[in-house]
Image (cartoon, rainbow, N blue to C red; front, side, top):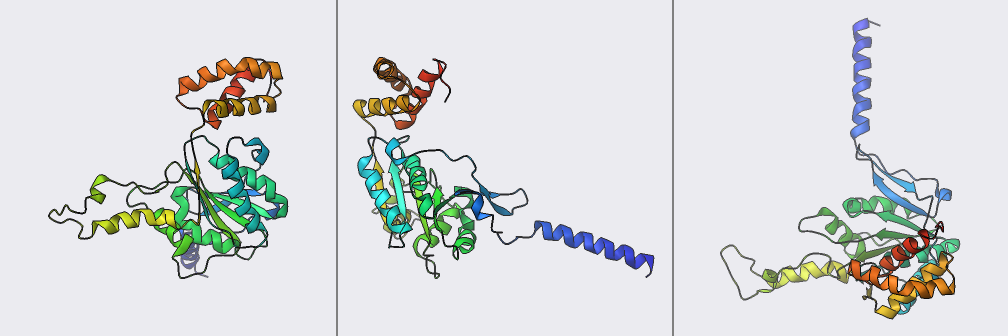
Length: 292
């Protein structure tokens, strides 16, 4: 073959290789036996992949205190799901640090031996939800798609994608997938006073501003189960402190002695939450030379 043609062929092959690297690729299935939880991550090239979570937080349902009613509702829904019974997508909302994400992780640990699996998807990657659901639709396991700290600003593309997946796409929902999301606010899009001023009509204004409000709350309404979390009172907070101290090896005397310090710790942070209680317990026990 003419050397010039060989050179052109090599250049063409190199060009095709580069094009292939930047074109969207179908999501490849991972080794499902590696883990019970996965994170969906986008590569620099734009290709998505499921990465195994190899060090899962060892949370148990009994570790969660002062959220018994919320725990009962989420556990019941999850139990129905893993048994193949009808179950709902879940939106957990309310005060920060009160155990919303921890409850989902504890449910995973509780039901993993019954085939429950979890895939964490960041808000920025929700546009890829249909690809993720297609990938797992034929699997025998049951998958929770976990979206943590979810909220949207105007115009974000993930909002429409999640809305369609929840209830609105022409495709039927997969029988083995549910969406569990946490948020500090129930309505996942910001609402403004101007949205409610239906009597105000300015030049170029919305003809039906009431419909704007309806649009902003419609995403939340597509979650079948709403579970609300509330700030803890002082005794609830101290009970959680005691539970974490005990888990880290504190004696009853140490737990009693830690109460005043735990209250000061919460006061300094302006919050009596489960997260603050856990942070205090680690600090308290760490200063005594106890490894976590």
